[in-house]
Length: 156
Ligand SMILES: [Zn+2]
Ligand SMILES: [Zn+2]
Image (cartoon, rainbow, N blue to C red):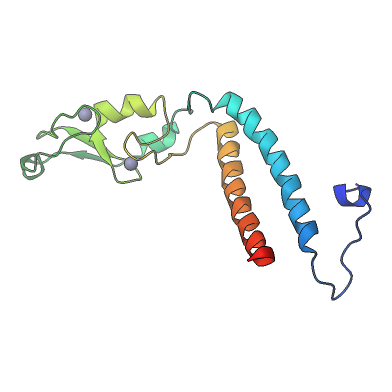
């Protein structure tokens, strides 16, 4: 299969030849172009109103659950969702970012959104499209970093 660069008459690197910064830049830009298309596509599905899929059922089921002890209740900590106290005998769930909520407060939330109401830390979802989108986002970040490094090495 002919690649983009074959079609555009670019010579592959010969032995001992230094990689061409401009070519590398062009490749990154081409990549970012594709990324922009992805962003548009996924922006339509997940972006805009900031809608995200629910957290993975399996993950939610496996969240550590804890019953508030009298000692803990005495600390008078509050649930960030309902702003009510963690009372003795209340069932509390801890999510991976270490934030704690009443089970009855966080479960309906995770049923709609996959991120922590406090810090936006994302839990895995059961939505393969969204997971692909997240991977893509991570790659885009890496690319941004590479672009910056490249820019610094050329003009820095
Ligand atoms: Zn609560
Ligand atoms: Zn959190």
